[in-house]
Length: 425
Image 1 (cartoon, rainbow, N blue to C red):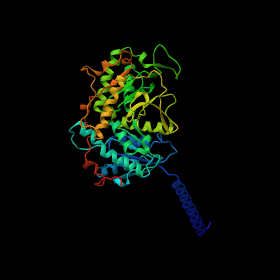
Image 2: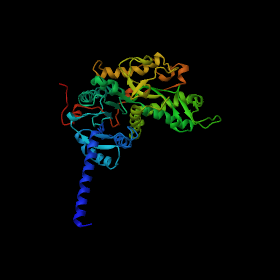
Image 3: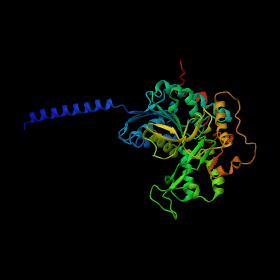
Image 4: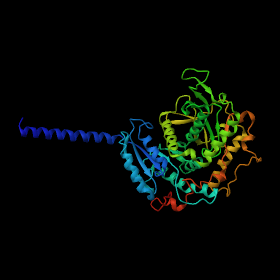
């Protein structure tokens, strides 16, 4: 073969290779990746969340994603480092990762918006200030999501303080997509499962159907009436589908009534259960269920807008039992033997209602629920319910996040996004 002929063949091969690459790029461009926006992307939870999102476990190995990290300009250098580390994962499902610090560009064509805790250096003055400081950013986010995001956008709120409040505020300021805004409760659920597993000397993954009622980051109930444990080592053993009620295996009633309650209360009050790893895993798992369905027959806890189910007042975001199927969630109103007395329901709903009223300016001072007794609220629970419900009754005045990353947001911190806010025209 002559040199000239070899050069001709080489040129033809090069042209064929270029044409093939161009065809692949054209086909690739026809497949729109899922646009995933993460707010407060410099938060620790984001660092743990990205590897899960890019693993293919959440949206599937055949769904490409583009991740957009949204934060203020002060966090830009940290975000650049995070972008490089994300690219170095070399994930087959990651089309791109980028940064956004401009308010007017936020949430453009977003399919998924993950709302993480915001962090500021603002000092805490009062609980009311802390509550009201959530409003400006939620108003801004709600307006921008409704204006810029995809029509079918899914918004998931995770965090360690005022999770229910932030969710209901986003619903208020983005009413057209309110049904697609949810609050993550799996962090509390996971902590309860781990606590039970330590008591039973088993694995948390073997414990199913723990129900979290109420305020995810505040006054809630851990309901064990439907909770079961699988593959439990005891005198009675069965095949893999065999399970036993947890309450039939814990004979220490004092532990159920008091000790476990105190542990969960401390975790909720300090926000310890929402460390970066658990927060990220809880958000990712909830998203996976939303897209692919929750395990058949399993109960999942989720913060959703109440429509009066279970006697819960309408118009507040409340954690309740659901299942995910066909790309949406369904409240499990057909569950039997999970009725909650009016007295207990009032305890759980009153603080959520007060939070909303204070945030919207309908009342000046937060009035926490008073049972009329100075002893623990837990002792007021009816005897038959007392065995089955673990109550995490958080002292709201002690819940102001003095030593936590999330603190009240002032207008200055909100305006960090390009030094301005965007208001609806």
